[in-house]
Image (cartoon, rainbow, N blue to C red; front, top):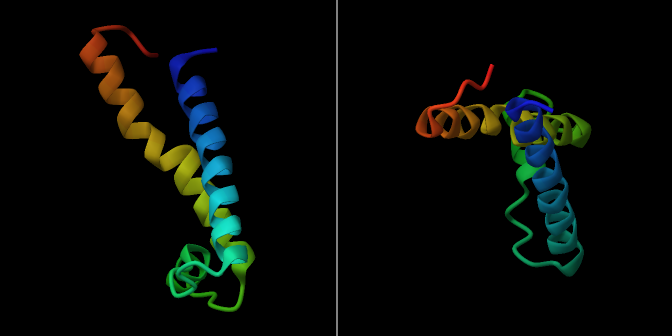
Length: 82
């Protein structure tokens, strides 16, 4: 697997862990005013659709946030990540 694939896999795994922590936080009633999923779905124009928020959460965690770190790792290591 190339470095980008590994980065996406790591981002997805980390997003799953973060998602589990978010669900546990909600179940425990800790900081109920902080709801990232509702925030994302509202920002995307669908305030009543938490599925949209979850999709955005996984897209951001898996793809968008891994693009920068993987690229910087490749540049700092002076290796070809293509």
